[in-house]
Amino acid sequence: MADILKVSKALADPIRIDILNLLHQGTNVCCSVAEEMNTNSQKGLCVCDFVDHLGMSQSKISYHLRELKNAGLIKEQAIGRWNYYTLNKHTLQAYLQEIQKQFS
Image (cartoon, rainbow, N blue to C red; front, top):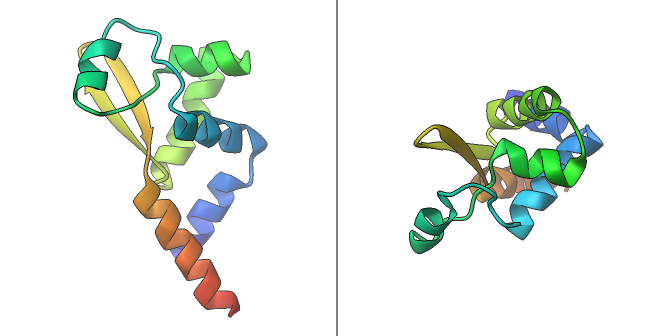
């Protein structure tokens, strides 16, 4: 039950939903590591991508990314000096299954 509450709390903020939508879309990576990531069949966004798309400060984006990461909704990968974020579909699917079980 604690995991459901943690994920629900993370999903309660519209900014975090916007971040998850951007990750789902796989919007272009702005940094030079993009080619390396794409050749590995990985998509990821760095903080600057979110800043550009959402028009928010880096510190505010970082706060929301940390909340999503703590809830297990996103994964973080460091490549060089940049951190890239991807959607953790496994956590989302488990959350939806648990919600369905609770309310069926």
